[in-house]
Length: 161
Image (cartoon, rainbow, N blue to C red; front, side, top):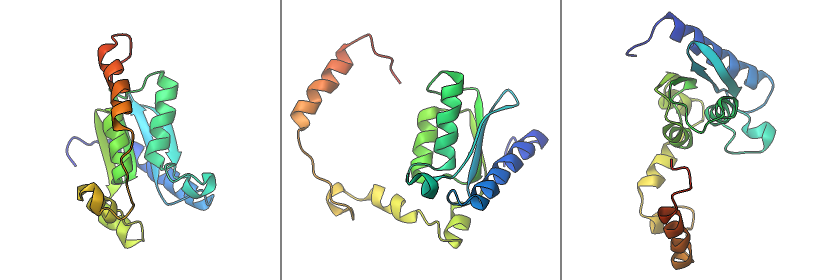
């Protein structure tokens, strides 16, 4: 890992402790994440997929949501996300939208696959043409939806991201 230090290790240990806490509480999988800004933990969460019956309740997503709420903004520039495992495709997307300065992770996606958290199928599905994906996707109402996009594009009052 490039650019890491003792402070990084401290925050990573917090993410790992959250992973273990969530697991012991039977909240979800063994994953934890913290968002840090200026050496202070802004948010720390563990996976809550099964306890919240929410497939999006991954540690990274929950930590991003909490940090953005606390900071009062929708992006995390100036922040670092520490996560106990390399982010899955969903979390990776959330991280890129949140735009932190850096991400530090412990286990790899291969380590996760070895304990039955294998997200390779999602990566494969993303690469497939829509008509070849394992879940059926149908396009409908594009022309009507494009009108909304045009309104967005032409309106200078919306906050762009």
